[in-house]
Image (cartoon, rainbow, N blue to C red; front, side, top):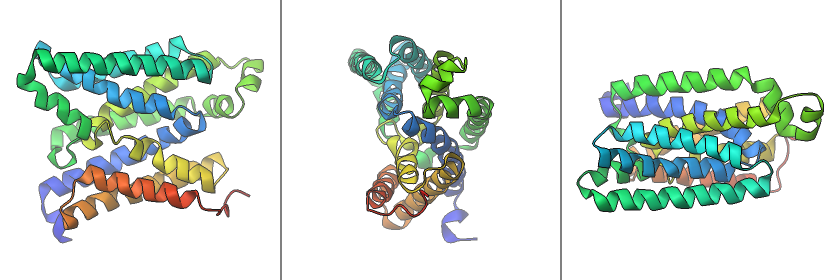
Length: 267
């Protein structure tokens, strides 16, 4: 067994990160395809307000995070249908939520560390109980994504034609944002809300630059997410650097390389 896997915290980190990388990257493929990267980023950051509010109320910060994120996903789906209108509503919801988070922390700073920790994650603090929840939630998100995959793919590529075919595009929008919310809620405590782009957007953006086919692109997205997340853990362990920062750096590196004039797989 490699040296780094002799420690329980590293084994837990590898399992949790693998689950989140696979689940988050596949959801993230459609986030990028549907141009909802800002919404994904906002949902991750809104969790801070939920965690802070739960700390103020004396309950589990994870419960507050989940309720706020899922509620925000519903509001985003209902308040904006076209891209420009949705960006405005997402920005306003994010602003209000962060303001609430700051207020909650100011009112009751005793448990503020739990809420602030949500911003950065704690991948090396994951225990077996959390891994079970991560596995259950990840499986549920992937099952939900599989259930709506065909109409979601059609609506993402050509929403006008999907409406003409009778596909309930608005309902799909709502269901997909709920899946993004659930994915963000389970990923944030591991990789942090500020760096969720590293999993949800970075690999998908790189893969779509290299590959124009949905099936192949999703496979490439998952592979890139695993490379950057597990590679980030190894880099963190051997270089004694924050894991989230290492994962984010690798994600940005892959995205930067994808911007080079290489399009071999797009044919």
